[in-house]
Length: 498
Image (cartoon, rainbow, N blue to C red):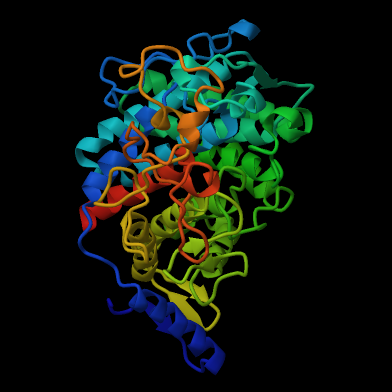
């Protein structure tokens, strides 16, 4: 193990020594492999997004078994809502996770784009596929179209997106039906993406930033959770359980980073306590942005540019301590094989998002020559990188089952993922329409999926490292865009440094 990975301070109690040893032993018992092709995994993790595209596909579409779909989305509301991404293995376009996916793809480019090599252009395209849709969804002032498709009718069928004949109902938030959560996340995505395109396409970047400003003002002025008025459509799928306050801070943080306008700095400082910046720090995902807010803002503190944000760095340090093996919060467990595990479905979303924050923060700490104090111990940037890398290596095959959880990577990977388009015959193979219930036999089939959704990372194993490679076990076998988005940044870094 590299020196100075974990530092112990003087007068350490036996209890603290035990925790520190647990921290070290966790990595030693599950050694980090040097044998992974991170660049290949990076290429495939980005290719996955092409399999999730909705709308008219471009001529350079690389996953050829996918075809155009949902070409009339938005027509029932008199707007164009074609494009965007299907969130997972179904055919619904959920705006909340799509915006979060776009934010994390943009953050991956901002922090790790310089190590993406030839995959940078494909990652930027993946960001733009998301933002082009979000611009459509926010084209009407004080309105955000947040979902296309009735999830209940969709989930009652097993259909290819190209055959979809279920309801494409359109759902929106407005002044009378607020949704500060999804609007705040949408503003964050647009603002983050404006940084990505600042030098690549200045006009597009300005469009994104100006729209982000407008959407954030709407989110802040008309406060409320979108699931209050849209509960029947968004719950239990992407219900706002955590509250909308974190998305307002998250949106302001990205607007501050993108615009450097004083108004957003003042907003963050003024609302830090009111909007509960320090809450539930051991989680980060489409519904909970607290840890991400603190890590993002802490970069300025560590660069010596923003002492007025010092409390956010304290929160960030507490977050890091809360997920370290041996020191972690009860809500963060580690499987016997060393995988981060949080209760609930689709665990890999926690693995990739938390690991992304570990890696991003380790880089910020390295530049400032700082470590994270955790009581009587401290964790160095090198240790945080090792922990993040251990999680990525588990995904790629260093685990008790010796299988990759990324489709198409490695010798053994999931064959029966919970994904309609992947599991049904492609349009080329079966041009005839496959109806709502006609697809059920493919869902229940023990055969591997006929179409390889290359790069898809599934929900993953349970807390004891067991994995049922079976479509009905959707919590374990379904891929999502927000599992892959932070993984892109992780793989970009490790492909260049290992």
